[in-house]
Image 1 (tube, one colour):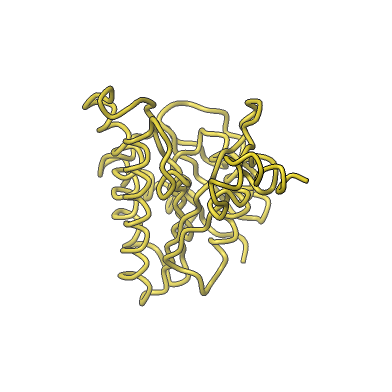
Image 2 (cartoon, rainbow, N blue to C red; image 1 turned 120 degrees about the horizontal axis):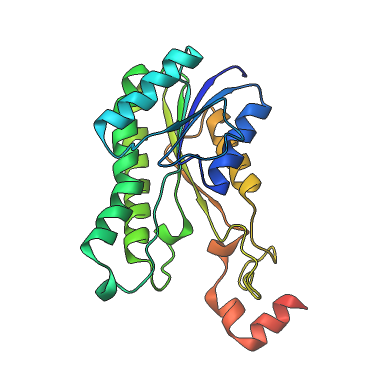
Length: 238
């Protein structure tokens, strides 16, 4: 089905821009929201709003309905990732990470659900850090784990109304660091367009709800021993 109204919050990131392009390519009309001005690539209507607040989230939803005429898909792609151990994470960094990811998802979902029709979809962009621990990202990991809990809760409560709620969990995306693909069974990191394709799929998958789909090149299914033990890694690569 094309011609839907799509709202993407967190539109200024490479993944956000790719999501907008994916929906545009299938004939949908897109509204993108970010905290600062950004190139409108991928979006028919780029907006600058703070959607951690009820006021900002309400404006985003109302604007989409007004300029597009309908709202069928909401993509929650906003996030912030302070890096450092928890003992070095400030109160402000913690609040920023939680509010950017989980606060935005809460505010936008609360504003959008009353106007979403039967057959609508919400897709959140989570991360493998929600379920695979990595050093230095306690606030980000907690926010993404909370996001996945919210996804399941909304899927359960609003499924009877025909509204599906799912998430994607990207691994390393667009990284060019040497050896950055170590541990990825596909032998490489991902691209924003590949994450966007998964988001687009979940927006269409009519009998899928309440799931988190890893978009991680197989990272989450690999035993750490497979790439930490030299003998196993050599066996894998040869």
